[in-house]
Length: 141
Ligand code: HEC
Image: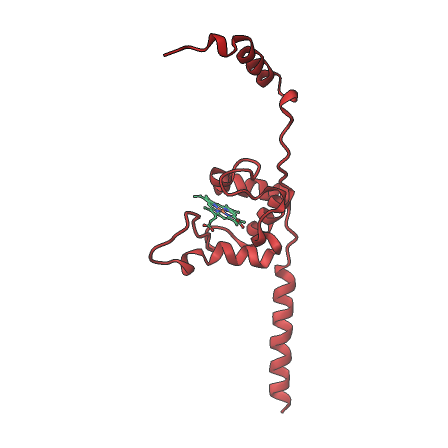
């Protein structure tokens, strides 16, 4: 059946081309913009060290782009009636696959590496002032 063969080949070719034109390497710089414009930072912190931390590659969801994108897309489907989560669903109309790949690449760059206390002059001054006041000077009321 040459016709079926041709049709199959055509479909395979179309799928192949479709996939290859959709291939997009995530760009962390673009992803930073997505992270801020879509409000990810409001729950996950400016550098991924917020309430639900993402920095230092701690999330299993970040294992690969595909898992991450499905996580973004299927949140509403998983808990449609009584969601036990507070992260919104990000459908393709809100966040394209390209944007999702960009933000994925950006999250991969996030590092939680706070400075030592001694490296923060203002904090050192506060500690010194507290020590100078000492427990003897603590207010009794
Ligand atoms: C309103 C708060 C909120 C916003 C906005 C938000 N998230 Fe989340 N996110 C959460 C919460 C809460 C969790 C963990 C619990 C859950 O799954 O609901 C989570 C989990 C995650 C995880 C998995 C973390 C883990 O523990 O494995 C990733 C990755 C993630 N969010 C990425 C994003 C990205 C990217 C955006 C922006 C496009 C975003 N989040 C916006 C609240 C938020």
